[in-house]
Image (cartoon, rainbow, N blue to C red; front, side, top):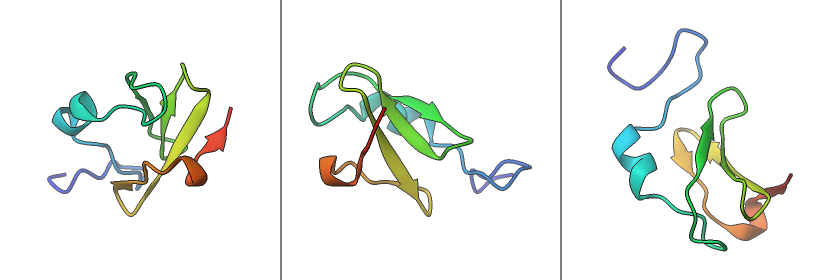
Amino acid sequence: MTDGATTSGKRAIDPELLEILVCPISRGPLVHDIEAQELISETAGLAYPIRNGIPVMLVDEARRL
């Protein structure tokens, strides 16, 4: 599909966007968890939500791992 959706209805993050996004706390890379619709910062121990295909990179919105 061209809109970034997968067959399960979950959206994939554009790989180019994922390359430039970093954790606002650790400045480290993020791992996309497509099932949970989160971007994971293993270094900071946080999971940032993705809402309507848009990463919410606010520490206050992140879930602790």
